[in-house]
Image (tube, rainbow, N blue to C red; front, side, top):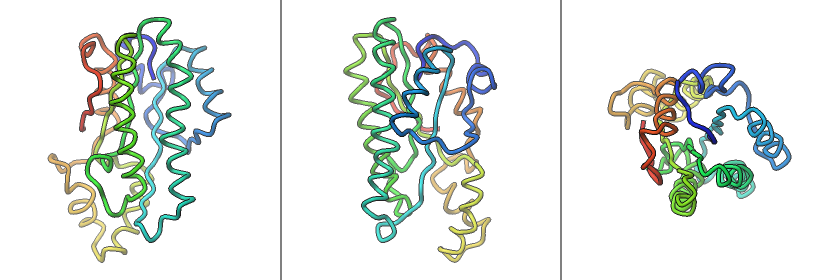
Length: 212
């Protein structure tokens, strides 16, 4: 969520400007997101938060588990946006970049809950882009392919065991199957896309989702 222009990737990836690499799990429960937004308002520095996907199929996903995903991702993001939007509206300038997993566009049977929540986030992005546009607040989504995070590395052996594949086959034939370049996405690539969406060059782009 950005309320002033960005000029360099270092503002996104450096310790002073915030980081796309998550150091620990972030819970967007209501008390925490209020404090988080207060820190953003005070510092006026860039912050992006990624909530890691939980790989579950229908039989493994309980209703409580789905409610937790919806509350963390969909309702958590809505609470944050509600708090920062008035600041952006007052300044008549704002940029909201939603980082949304690819399961929102291409359903994955191993990401049943995440697919539904990510689809809802894509809908939220599109709806808010129309609502906020008159106030020069642009809302877009970045949909990255797999990033080789510690979480993904931890899931590879489990996926290999579940599907009867080698770990190398999981990387090549499962994780990177839909990635045209057959390479993992990097944090720097996501940061560069975010920088573009927060720059003057993207001043007419809103309601879009960019696959990385």
